[in-house]
Image (cartoon, rainbow, N blue to C red):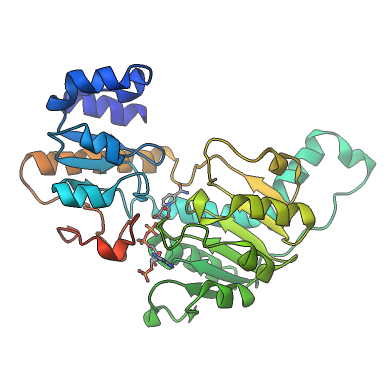
Length: 325
Ligand code: NAP
């Protein structure tokens, strides 16, 4: 829990810190479940079916994240529980990180940093790296973050193409109606869509092999977008050129094989983790709770904005209650 959010929640509400009761969760829930009207979740813990069922008075789940893959949206809908997330305020940071991962992977920034620190420079110059400017970038999910990544990549004279559920003609970027066509036509693949049933393992062996030994995958979406064992195998076997990863299938566990590979850059799910954005996200979490408990429209109900934070089952099936204000 982000300190500032915790402080604000404690100021305004009676805060129960479920994470302090991991050993005695059941007892804690038995004692307090009839008092809890809101759940605040994040990218790692949301509101599972089990948690929702154990909180009969639950009215709202306010998530400190855009992604809602840790919340059982179907159950929330069935029970009339509202759901909010934190879109838009984090878009720039996540897009910045995607570009940073592209640059650090292609230009071998982490590897060359290790080279200097270990004193190896004295033995000779560092190896050549790969140019970013002018490359073709394919984006999976041209939503808020995907579009912000595209804008930034345009400044590097990159050709932009994308795969989304629907074409966005006004962007002027080339649309492919499936991911294989996209990967056939790009050098750098950036995954920026929500995790749903449809996008689970959307990057599989076939997609990886289509990108090939010169191709690079950047994942700032969710770990389960990629079949991780297949990714690791392709990197080890040289069937894929490189990867820049912010997210993993079983966070915080990262496949140890990756630690020994110089063609990967690994960061610990820090897409939106700046002070500025974390505060803005926390304020939005509180703003949504305040709005709910004063019978006002939520500031950012899930599904607000262009395409909607979404989750299992397919986000199209989840109709959202209010427009974004
Ligand atoms: P968004 O505005 O809702 O955009 C999502 C995009 O994904 C839309 O273009 C949507 O397409 C597309 N999409 C949805 N389902 C798809 C499918 N089955 N196949 C292909 N494309 C699909 O969301 P956002 O704000 O950009 O956030 C995107 C995701 O980034 C979040 O859900 C979260 O998982 C991840 N994220 C990660 C971090 C991090 O720290 N690494 C931080 C924030 C968010 P249509 O427009 O055609 O429907």
